[in-house]
Image 1 (cartoon, rainbow, N blue to C red):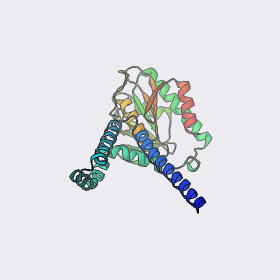
Image 2 (image 1 turned 120 degrees about the vertical axis):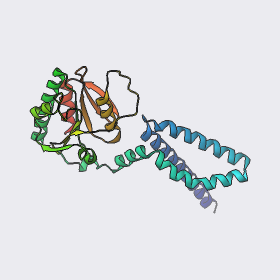
Image 3 (image 1 turned 180 degrees about the horizontal axis):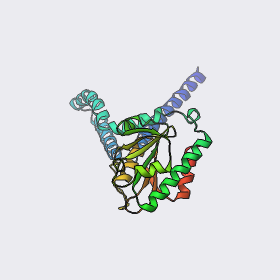
Image 4 (image 1 turned 90 degrees about the vertical axis):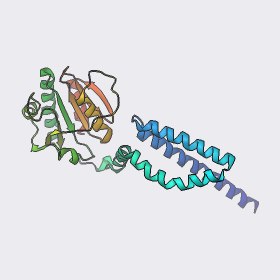
Length: 255
């Protein structure tokens, strides 16, 4: 009988450890999902307030205060999705993305030709200081952005990209979206990041590239109209690249 009680005690300890670990993982996952966004400050504030309220309630056992908390739960559960709508959408998109083993792979020959044409166009755009914004669709579909632009469904050529981003043309201010190894649309409007950029030379195109990368897993290439510099944005980060590094980035993206 004593051995049975000891076994049950160890089992209970194991369950408590698992319970604590799961709660810690959930909190860590929530903070990681919201990291780098304005919502992370709200999440921290909510957690601090929730812990303070729990501590006060457990310490003083206030009857009216407990009643208020129990009847406010539904309101809070309804309000949180409204407050964190953009971040929750991004989190659900991440969870719903297709696993890497199930992703559709591009043909090596087509991918290499695509990379060559894009790099050739970006190099010329950079030399001419013609601003450009080129988006490469990954596992998350970009249908909502494609539908808002001018549908092309055209082969990718450097000449076409140079024509689209030529100054004073109808489509040069928007983004080109490449989907299924073709130019799906041009003149597309992308969401702007709400973050403050540390580099003063980064303009609206860079904000759009970062904004899209915060929402989906696409790769975006930016050519600055002011300086001619080339940048690549993904997963909320943006870095400057030269044409050699750009070729490597695109080749790795299509592997």
